[in-house]
Image (cartoon, rainbow, N blue to C red):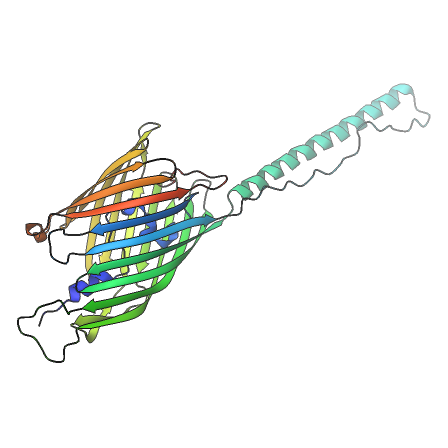
Length: 358
């Protein structure tokens, strides 16, 4: 009897199978929702191991946006102070004594007014600063379809993220995603050398799909950590016979830094790690941006060498492509993998379509 544990694990981890994570980090970390000032919508398709019969393929739709009211800072009015021009009663004093006391009173009032105005301006600036760096929220959603014959997965989830400033440039966010995932298998087209009796040829299961993440970022540096399939569930193990195997939590982390070489040109080296089912994988990635075009290369240990290119067709639409050159033994039967992503950026009233992190 042939086991397809590896197939079922591949489509049950809750992680979108993508090479271009730097293009859409929301796919691997719910805390990224709302990081950018614009609304981001993306659709992507990836075909793995082309040339291999029934090779895996992935399709997804995703979107996320920031929730922050575009309200103006309301400045409280400055309280009125006494007019420094009021007079001091003469009361029989000489004119010189009167004028001297009047001058002293005027100077005192002027100094008090000046001190009040300085304190008022300082308080207003502090309030403006606090208003500018107030916390905000992000929301997102995605739909994922994966086919890894004879298994498949269809999932949908919603995301909420909370963002706050730790300093004027450093931000921290927490995010959580919740949804459902339908996993199915179909063995009707599978041929067996020794057919077995009482064999279930098809079945499907619906399970909760919960993930969470945290993200620390500036306009140059980012660090993220996320976890998928936080609620383990029973998986198909051997042709529909339910065993003790469970879909386990998958952990992912990423670290990157943007190096500006000129106003129009910068590079972003990054490191991506993944731990799942006792196996640790790591990706080394370098991406270079020049004006509205970019290119990158990724080395995935013992798996693939990927090449990526992208272009911003205008301020709203971008297109990117990735090719995976297989390094594993599958290269004997596969010509590699292809991935295409189309993105749309919807600018807000007082925002930018320029990516903050990349």
